[in-house]
Length: 379
Image 1 (cartoon, one colour):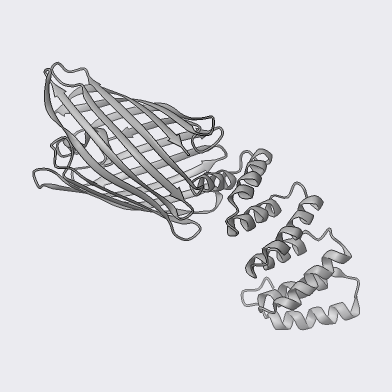
Image 2 (image 1 turned 180 degrees about the vertical axis):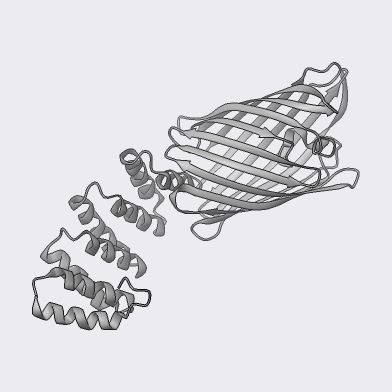
């Protein structure tokens, strides 16, 4: 079976001879089950897996092969019964607990999936796969959310600022993904005068594809000078094993003067138990921006502490949207710190403070401080 080109039918012939010569040697029965499984003779495979388990239940592989067969044939109730029996016999084995969660996920039973994910998270707190699964599960739970966001930017250069950005949004999340509608308002002052202000309409969506993939889509429109005229964003995400995630996407911005900006974004993330770290780069014609984001999740996906460091201006920075063109070729260095907290299962409160050292002419920098607040109601 371990050769480059195994002959499963020959293996079966040999194992049948072995079983005849030594009927109590259960390894021959296990090998028969596995080889019948690999040639798609499922009934025979099931018979031999069950035979091994009935004769001697310490064969962990027999349980695992049988559960996988139940999942493949969509016999979920049988699979759950076998899984529960295996967990009783092997309480410290992670694969059986993962199989139970997978069966609930395939049945769209998010209540039990969440229950056992939390249980296995407590037992294996530093496992990156479990942290990733738990985050994705919360992303598929059915609910609605309404919220407000407010950001104020102070600038230490005379006669510049402050800037204000506010949003109201409604988001609907389902098993297929989520869609949200936003209304954004911005006002930028200089020397006590309003230099620009206005509204922007925006729609965002996360759409789940196959089990390990999902899409991000963003569209926004404005007729006011405080925002670009049109914004289009797309990213494709793929979740790998051991807590790894990667994304690839693009951004397109049409400014109010009909000039346009484009960027390619590449990201790579990793779960380390309750920690998540993400590196994302926006490759743009006039300069590249890089962000490193780290989060520590201490309860749900809404309960975390975050630290962010970055260089350059990305096309995802809504606060500086009206100045993309002049900032993309200039240097900037920033750090952010904040937290998010779910209160009484319904209220989400967030705070993020950012210090940005921004070049405004060659080798001259201004310090920009952002104070952002988020309040949402989840129902």
